[in-house]
Amino acid sequence: MTETPHPAATAEDVEAARSALRAVRQEVAKAVVGQDAAVTGLVIAVLCRGHVLLEGVPGVAKTLLVRALSASLSLGTKRVQFTPDLMPGDVTGSLVYDARTAEFSFRPGPVFTNILLADEINRTPPKTQASLLEAMEERQVSIDGDPRPLPVPFLVAATQNPVEYEGTYPLPEAQLDRFLLKLTLPLPGRDDEVEVLARHAAGFDPRDLAGAGVRAVASPEQLAVAADAVRRVQVSREVLGYVADVCRATRQSPSLSLGVSPRGATALLSTARAWAWLSGRDYVSPDDVKALARPTLRHRVQLRPEAELDGVSVDAVLDTVLGSVAVPR
Ligand SMILES: Nc1ncnc2c1ncn2[C@@H]1O[C@H](COP(=O)(O)OP(=O)(O)OP(=O)(O)O)[C@@H](O)[C@H]1O
Ligand SMILES: [Mg+2]
Image 1 (cartoon, rainbow, N blue to C red):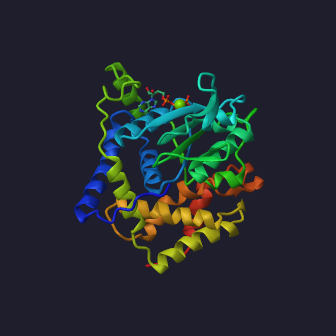
Image 2: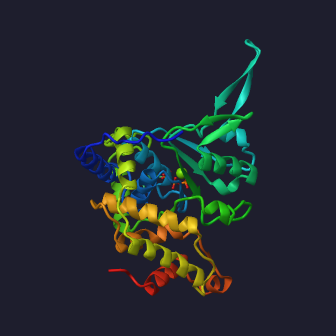
Image 3: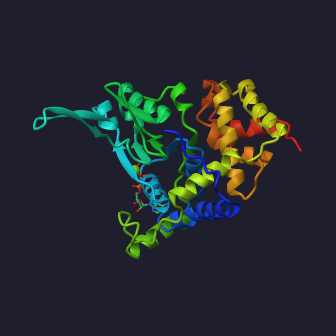
């Protein structure tokens, strides 16, 4: 399904959409303490129509964050726990036989939503992972040769647990590249953790977001206007060159065995554009590219075993790469 363009959006509409998207941050903050980078990353993913990987240990508010975001954008959300026995049809839906009419009818799976929280995607075997990845890529589900379009927007937020690798099916590199961003949710600092506790002490119920005051601050129409405006953000030839140089430099890095693909470079261009737009500009600066380099590129490169043994992190390598590339002025 192609998205309806918004040629009729006036400058005021675009400004209203920008304010609304910025207000999402405050709205989510009514439920989630901190985790600003993840909130911004999710808003950028929604604007770019991309999918995200969420990484963080259990209990750092991954689920709460996705639910609060959906509520503040008036989008639908569903959650699937990926288990070793989950079948492709449990994700996409399946044909069920109706004895009364003696016909098969399609029962849509949880993938038919706006924001799908795919929890612990690496616990399910490749066949079921593939069915989700196919839906992500094609934005439709084909059952029995019959294509059924997914809602617009459609975004998968897939969680991976960084501590447990035993008995899991890690996504292959080619699949990781299909995620626009990889957002990491760190453990909160002490002040934030005390604030989480204070809210609980005051009666905060994570299942009742409306009770916590979370409201829809951006409409689906505003989201469409915003996504359209992002695609019209200007990028100079120099900044395009900078994006290319950063990605090319990852392929030369002695710490990496796999560098960023050209698809990764286009992803960095998209996320930098969305960030520029959210920041109130209609052109991309090299700083926008720098700001989005870590979350956009970190899952698209692979550390060499030596670097891993030395305890070097991917983010640190990306910082070194950024430091080595000449910035256009
Ligand atoms: N930053 C935070 N702000 C507000 N509440 C938080 C925060 N971190 C944790 N909590 C509290 O911890 C609970 C657990 O969070 P949630 O279920 O969203 O974690 P999760 O990361 O999805 O965990 P899992 O990996 O087990 O699914 C929340 O409902 C909330 O009460
Ligand atoms: Mg969860």
